[in-house]
Image 1 (cartoon, helix red, strand yellow):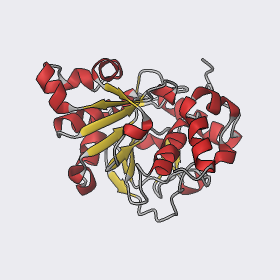
Image 2 (cartoon, rainbow, N blue to C red; image 1 turned 45 degrees about the vertical axis):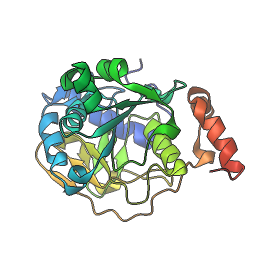
Image 3 (cartoon, rainbow, N blue to C red; image 1 turned 180 degrees about the horizontal axis):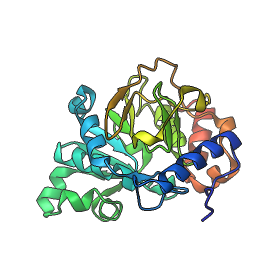
Image 4 (tube, rainbow, N blue to C red; image 1 turned 120 degrees about the vertical axis):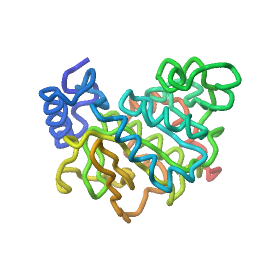
Length: 255
């Protein structure tokens, strides 16, 4: 794996920002595990998860989507303990069944601990594999981030999977214009508002939780209505089987 990321080169400005954050975390005592080319795990992730879970939007949610990275383990665990239906993607969305449903009631009935089921390996083993279209309307979505701004800007690790995933769900109506999009990061991952350039296919963040604070961005920028097909790279079409089918149906007006 390249130190500068498997997907470096798509946006030099974003690459530079990601590298700066990864380098800062690597040089600090705040990183937990690998940082480069990853959504970085961090000291205080449990406090960030707690802060996010205090929002009314989280507490009122029944269906929660959370990314699979270690940095968001604590928020997946909270979802299960709070009795929510948890939906997690297969990394890179590359399988024919790209999503998993983790139902806390089913876990309890089988004697499987939430601590195990919230791990990447655990939800793969004990979750139920489902298609994109089997995911019900989502009440709350959590994405992984490398850098964020207080006004809701976000940069991931460069693959674009979070934006594609959100775009797919917007096409299907699984995510609506009012569905909260949130992330948890270390406070050192906060950057200036001008440092993150949001593209038309990017979804701004509504909540950012760190180990020290909860940020309500107040972002009212228009949300993308679906996938920006012109922005999809050839390798992304190859990696995500459902994209070609969704594009065909979209162009035929069947969504």
